[in-house]
Image (cartoon, rainbow, N blue to C red):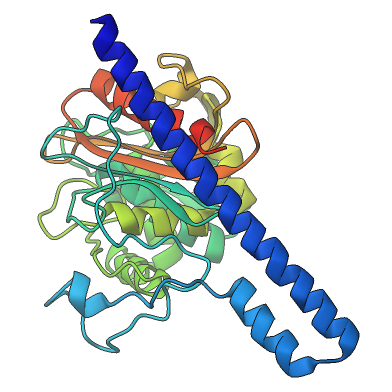
Length: 357
């Protein structure tokens, strides 16, 4: 047993040292090229300056081929090469596994270093998966982009007519809730009634809002994603990929409100009943890292993200986090058979965020 542990430790250390050398090499190259750029600028050599600048800021990875990764997909083949996978994105070329991360055969997961655009772990990055409530990342993005957080939304019968057993805050038709409270209920507690209310307020109809979701996904380059609802309740035609979830989380970083809300372990939502009574309801976060039911690895700070659970999707978690050095990461685990296993697997992934330095 001790010999096995020692061998595992050696493998982990070897992987850590390899990544460290690669990272140092990249930084040295960037520093050298930056020095050349400064010299070129000082000497007035404009052409050389532009060449060196391009070398520094252009990702050496070739443009991502949509038609190759998603043959026959809804966005496949239209342009051949996708400009959207540009120099500021992590690009997955092949599977990249780690000995200490044990996802089951039918699971998918990723760990990306956002700063260095490095793929640390990738299993099934482009595999079609059911997102469950991870869908609500996109719902929130549209709320931040087009909504006014001070708007007062009147809950409709449609907003509270959801499938039995659905996660809901408990609104009644006629209740009045601000958009700000709805977004908190959406991201902290994963309320499906909040998602529905946001959709009909922003899009006027759920159908129009779903069109907006798919349009935004296309703009982000989510070529493996198709939405049919704003909450993630099971639908065969409602799907995404781990890589597309990364693109959505990366977009979410543009909105400080997203991480401010998704870092909350609880929230007390306040709204008004149709008859004028003010109601306050305490909501507990669905993310076990935030509630203390699971412990993140030492040095890892959870910045936010989204959980998702249905019988078809399994237990899923998408996170923004930062390591002990303040460097941001995106991590996704899909399809765990239990919540306990989900957080064990996510913690095993996040351990590698600190190893990367």
